[in-house]
Image (cartoon, rainbow, N blue to C red):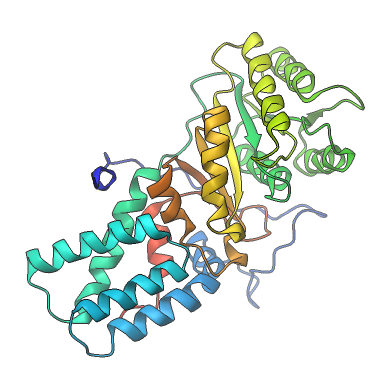
Length: 344
């Protein structure tokens, strides 16, 4: 029943790109202190999760550090805290079951002893989602972006372009959101900021634009194609069928493409993000997730809900507006940032 708690193999941490001064007009960065030194990624992650931690960590600290005993009442309160953080019923039940087993196995009696146990349980739940994206298997490596309107797809593409450029990769952007002229213009701006070409059309469908982009990438020996698509709700069945068509057309030029289908999720949507993962996965067979706007929500525990309901690799998380505030997901780093100040 709890097979997802198996320990994954040791996965090397993804490379850290160099932090470079951002270009004029790029996303703002308000994280630098008065000294002008930009905080490390670990510090920015902690800062980005501050809203979740302020609610989750404060309540958890009050519960576990008040000198009580481990009993049924404590587990009920702990369940309430986890659900409030949007961990979800399934993941909460699984984590509490793991805690009860550890309490019995290690004969724990004090509430304060549950802090490390809970941290380990959440890390174990999230660890299978930690899977860095390897883009050296194909050239060009085609990444198709999907998601609902407002999730941050186009902005994520711009940040991904910057990230991969910092690792020495060449990038080409495909303006496949042909439903909104503003999306095409926004992607063009990101292309200019990052100094990468954008394949776009004033008219035509998304599949045709992405097809042309892949053809151009082959001719130019480009490493990565980042293909935007129009936002759509899972309930818009005609649009979900249209995005399936985009995938089929891509496969005509490369039967193995798209090599990655990334679903971009807005963490502020809470449990609705789980519904989006299920719907888009059923339609496209999602290979990875990007969780954005974690700095704007007090419910960052939705990653745990996804891990329980429909586990898919979380390739990147975003915790701010800065270009380099989108980084590969590392489960232990995420949990450490979430639990900071919640201990004794």
